[in-house]
Length: 465
Ligand code: BG6
Image (cartoon, rainbow, N blue to C red; front, side, top):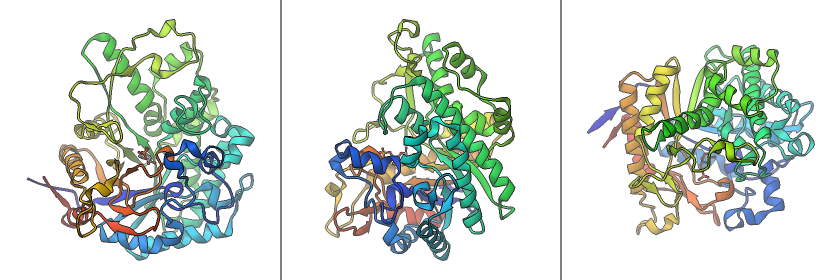
């Protein structure tokens, strides 16, 4: 069976500055650079972000490989801690400016559309230490200054911009579930951080519209959408799934697209005494500065049920998981290496949800992928990793995506996570996601079987299943 994709479809892949560049010549440390300095044992095999995929040094050769695997667009991010010297004034670091100029020019020279994101979990640690990072509205102001520098410097060549990648991960990882530095558990701060990031996104969009250099340029946000399916059709499980969706998906999706936070979530947070501090002026900025375009990162769905312990009986700090807990559905398909369920049909559900409930706005899959460990197990005699599981994973997701598109959802692209195996937060290099393998000792890069397959698929603009 062949499934054809729309004309000018984005066949691409995504990475981020902190995960690919390496720390070379960086004036400042991000929270992750700092975390690795103070607690290297928190990272798999104690591998930190210092070298990553060496993209800072080898981006020209790496982009040539990206071209070879058929990518017509690639997302990466500009590191705040590389571009800016003084965060208060947003004065520029000359090497940072040179690097990102060269990088963007090289993408364009090799015929790949650069898609630029401004924040991928990598706030400069100095801003955390001085102001509490996203807990502070002053940091919101500083972020907008950094973003303005990016628009002014690169907006003549970059037309596709994104404010934040997966803001929910900042909230969850840093403030609730302790998987990102500084690993706090503080529900009240978590809620304020969510609000401040949404405000930062809206203020950045406002600045972008004031200074954008090309009429066709557009801006959006990248959200990890994880549809939450109830364990049963009983009222308590349906309620659990409704609240899970409000918290995990609608918290950023609604204000980013409609300009307002979901009233049911605001009521719940207010009743629990954790609602954010906001002003009418800020809410008006959020209302007036919604996105042009949406990026959706999709890896796995959530199955949820009512929690075993009722919300009222908990005396501990506020947590969204008072209202829902994970349901381990018997028989679900799993990627055991990563521990995530594989459920491609959710991409179709997302496509129809955007079509029906979000004004059918233009969107693309900004990340989707399969992390597998010890991929050298699958090396063939020619030295190529035969990652048929990844090909199947992509095929199945493209199948459901195309079904959504053929039923009217306005999706214009698919970006795989990730072009080259890259460094990945606490997981470091344990799970590999790339179309191109990176040997982290020699930095030799080799196209995997999935890379050759992806090139043919992109070239044909259709997937064969
Ligand atoms: C996404 C992030 O959440 O998932 C990426 O945007 C990340 O930065 C990817 O690398 C895969 O997750 P992990 O933890 O397996 O690397």
